[in-house]
Image 1 (cartoon, one colour):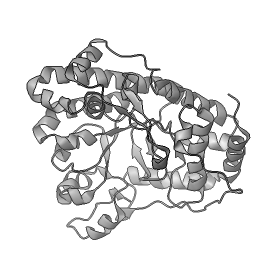
Image 2 (cartoon, rainbow, N blue to C red):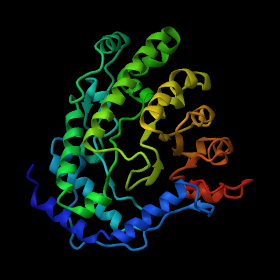
Image 3 (cartoon, rainbow, N blue to C red):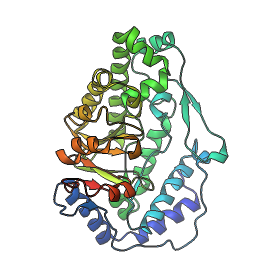
Image 4 (cartoon, one colour):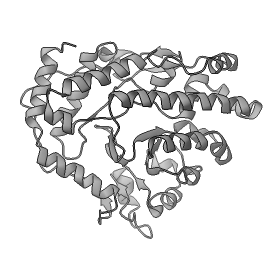
Length: 354
């Protein structure tokens, strides 16, 4: 694919600015933290040298990137440009098509927000249990439908483009797209009726979750054919809760905030466990309250890290007891809350990053 002059200029600027020694040191700090060689209380990695851009690059509106691979690449590369001028951010990009990637592959309608919101798209639930039965009966869908084609085409574009820029190819990581987690995708597809069916027809809920988990695995298998996975450690996010984690995948488990501990054990943990085992472990993210299911979550083999938001909604002592106290990293934790709670008995045991 022929790239625009603006994207090429940005690539060339980033290639000039990447300092291998600086990036090796930065990644090494994360490696030491993740493999228990960090002896401080709160981990906050720092890029030793920053590098401002040599020109003012025009911003890209996120709405313009959907359907335009060149603009999607430039949108993501602008984050890299900013990260090089920042002490703590990762050099990492993704196929940035929002939370509805996998639900769109199943045929859910894509919803693009008004430009004034400058935010990623999502999907509308297909509506109703009968439609969900038809979807489940159809089996694994064509993975290149919905945003699937855009995701894979973006991965191929990055791999092809970065070959001409050796420092970018080495140090700009392409992390896996946001395919959420099995329970989240099930709710995105099904809507609120999913929760009623957990009581009325739990066997069918398990059937749907099994299909979603199989499709999730097939989708990531295809992604990793394009962008080979690193089973040691991977970054996630660049300009928000920037983190690295052990293992390969980062699952989202937001919908579980609506479940009782017993329902989490029945309807979420088994499917998250399958994916952790399949892909060599990783990290789990949740928004909102998770203290009621954190014990079960952290017993899943291969869960090496937790990324959470909104500590004020959680009993943080319960969270700490099942994460940092057990050697599971609490990643990209809120800085103010880390300071507020630092005098807890036992501290953070070198397992918390901000």
